[in-house]
Length: 115
Length: 120
Image 1 (tube, rainbow over the protein chains, first blue to last red):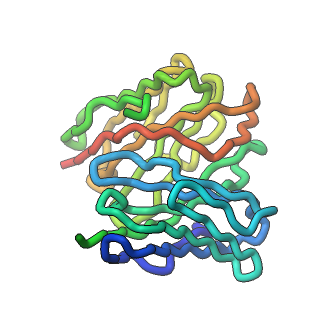
Image 2: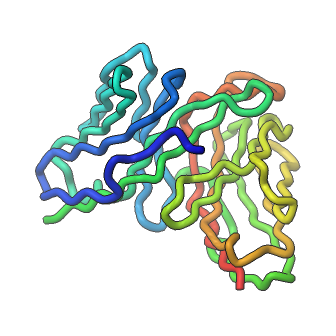
C-alpha cells in the first residue's frame, strides 16, 4: 500500500495566520520528499522539496520540516493568503520498475483560507 | 500556463466507446507521465515514458493503452472502460538527468490541467 499519508484531510485558517500541513510516511528508506499544491480545476504544482540529509528547507513564505525520527514531514505557510487555498499533497520518491524512481503521493489536505 | 497541454478537458463516453486523451508538452522535457486522480484517493501513477521508452506500467488494465510517439507527445487510448474508471487523468513531464530506461526523477513534475473523464 501507499507509504505516504496525511494527518488531516482539511484545514481552515484565517487570512494572515500561519498554516501547518502535516504528512506521515512509513518507509524509513525514503530520502526525498516533495510538496505539491493543487488549486481547483488545475493540475498539481511543485512547491518545495527536501532531501533526507536536511531537517529544514525554506522557500518564499513556505518552509518544509523533516523529522526522520518519527517519519514526519510538514509544510508551513507563513501569512496565509486566500490564494493559498488549495489541496496540498506530500510525495516521496520511491524505487519503481527496473531501478527507476517514481513519485508516490499522499491523499492530500484541503486548505481553506477565510478572509 | 504550465507548458503541458491536455485535450480534451472533459470527456463523457459509454463503456463501448473508444476515445483518446492527448498530452503535449512545450518544455523540452524528456520524460512524460500519466496519473489518475480519483476522489478521496491519492494520485496514482499509471505510465512513465523516458525518451519515448516506457519505463513504468503500474499494473494498469489493458483497456488503457499509452502511446508516446516522441518526447513531446503522449496519448492514452481508452476502450471498453468501466464506470469506476471515471476520474481526472493528469499528464506530467519532467527533465530527467539520464537517458535510457532508468529514470532518476528530480521530483519536479510539471502537470497539465487534466482531462476529466466520465464513463457512463
